[in-house]
Every structure is written in structure tokens, then in C-alpha cells.
Image (cartoon, rainbow, N blue to C red; front, side, top):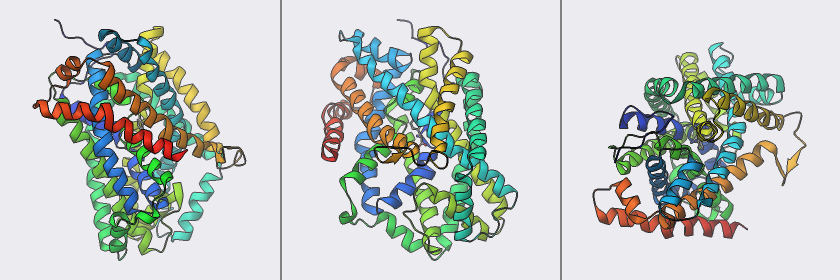
Length: 449
Ligand code: PFF
């Protein structure tokens, strides 16, 4: 049988797939969100739950997404429908893909606002405006930014355009090139910052905040946030990784590739936490400061460091790139679907989608100023979209994909495609996606109600 190919292109090699998927996974979720939700949820015990979720639920579901995508070589909705049909089941399983597209659109709209903050900080840092700031001044600068819708709108617009341009360029042209250089540089700089954190007298406290488990601090809501974040950070539950999997070369081994991506993503989050918390404690700041945590702690650290203006600027550039390579993957499944289904040109599909996410993004940035009194279920629009996507839509999508891979697709099809070295390992994976992952996430959902 001739090998199926995606009409959208394919990654040049397994290595490029790893880069692209890691580019999708590593983003604001790791460097901005993970530290701040760890701070809000009391530290150690939360981190432990998050790590367990990555290993027990995230990795197996990522394997499921990659194999479904690669076997069908189509956008998520069509991939799910095709594999269901191939196994003689109902095509309505494709509906999971619709929820995923909606999640991607909603996530993009607030993601782009935060990425906009990062872009602003590149300039603040480069211009020297952050040199030597105290923690109070850093807090004030951040609040001033939030209070200024015009500046927020400008950066949100620029970021959306940056993403649209790369997505129009397609799989090979834009994406590969950006990730190849920038990801390794981000790693190096994170370690530099980690080294700085180690040299401060907040390091021991930062370390124990992250790794000493105090289960009294853990609530069911915190567990749900940890579960949700494990999906968010690995880009699971909405079809991003499935879409990327559909461009993956046939020969590459899915198991080891997914392990590498999960490992790198977790490493970046932990190192980011170990860089940020020592700075927080050394300067007497509040670890539970919320979404501004990174934006008030890093300027203080760079402000005190030799060469801080340079390193600070570089660091914000790299975070911006990490956000960029992630945001691309939020749009890709929907763009691929519009091309396949509606027959739009890639460029038209991307621009149309870009306009939609840009418009919803305006509501998110307004949450901090002109719309601050608009609330949904007691949250502003920004927090509400973050909450329902990360804590509800992605885990729900993830469970459904697990159930799909475990119960709908014929075992033979899954094992052919995943092609693990040992049959024992395959059976373990199958057991996890059939029972463990859906049950674990389901229980957390129910206990939260
Ligand atoms: N994984 C990205 C991050 O951690 O920043 C965010 C993200 C990208 C979530 C793509 C979901 C997704 F489909």
C-alpha cells in the first residue's frame, strides 16, 4: 500500500517533528503560567500532582494524538472521522475535533494578550526602563501596562499578525526555521537565570516551596488546575499535537519521540520555577501574585544583574519566540480543517481565523481596564477563558481522545501505527488510555462539582 501523505506538507525528519512539537508545548504555559499557578496553589504538593499528571495521563494521551494524526494524515476532525470509519464505528467521533478547534480559538485570544505583554517587555528592557527597578516599581510598571488598552491592543495586534504570517508560510517554511535556532537559545538562557537564582539567598526557600509537599495546602480545585495545566502545557486535548502528528514521517518512533517532548517541556517548567521563586523570596515578594508574577520578578532580577539590560532583553525575546511557536499550533488544526473541508486557500483560511481570534482577544485585554467589571461566573473574561479552556475543555478533549484511541480504534491499527518495541509496553499504554486516564480525569471533574 502506498504511504498516505498530508496535503499540507510534512516535517523533514523525526528531529524536526520533535522541534516543532516541543515548540508547541514549550511556551507561556511553562514560563509564565506554571510558576504563577504553582505560587497560587501553594507550591510542592501542586507540583507533585502536576508531575504525576504529565507522566500518567499526558504522555499516554500525547501518544494517542500523534498516532491518530499520523495514521489519518488529516486535520483532527477528519482524522477522527476517518479512523472511526476504518474501524467500523460512527463518524460522530469527529465532534471531538470541533471542541478542540473552539478551545484553540479561545486559548489564542488570551494567549496573544500575554504574548503582547512579553513584546512590551522586550522594549522596556532594551530601552533601559527596567534597569535597577525595585519590586514596587516593577509592580507599578506592570499595572500601568494593564491599565493601558491602547498599548495592549497594539501588541496583541502585532503578535496576532506575526502568528498569521508564519501559519500562512506553512509547515516547512516558517515554523521549522524559527524553532531550530530559538529553542536551544531559550534553554541556555533559562539555565543562566537559574544560575542567578541559585546565587540569591532565596534559593533554598524557592526550592523548598517547589518541592516540599504540604498536602494540607492542596484543594480539589488546585488538583483540577494541575490536571488542566498538564494538558495545556503539553498542547493536548485540542488537536494541536494531532495536527502536527499528521505531518510526522512514518518511520519515526512515536514512543521515544513523545517521551523526549514531555521531558523537555517539564524540564523547562521546573527550571523556570527554580529561576523565578528564588527571586521572589530574595526580594520579599508574594509567590501568589497571580498572572503578573513573571513580569514583576524578572525585571527585578535583571535589574540587579551585571549585563542585565542585555540578558533581560534577550530573555524576553526568547519567551516571545516560545509563545510564537506555541500560538502557531493553536491555529494550525483549524486552518488545516478549513483548507480540507471548505477548500479555502491556506492564506485566506489563516487570515479569516486571525480576525476572529484577534477580535475575541480585545475582550480579554479589556478585562484589565475598560471591561474590568464584566464578569462571567465571577471571573473577568480573561480568567474565565483561561479557566474553561485549560481546566475543562482540554481535559475533556483529552479524555475523549483517550477513549477514542482505546475503545474506538481497532487494537491492531493502534499497535501497527505506534509500533512500540515491546508488546508489554503497548498493552500498558492501552490500559492507561482505556481506563486510567479517563477515570483519573473523570474523578477530578466530579469531585470539583
Ligand atoms: N503548550 C503551550 C504552552 O505551554 O504555552 C500552550 C498551548 C499550545 C496549549 C497549543 C494548547 C495548545 F493546543
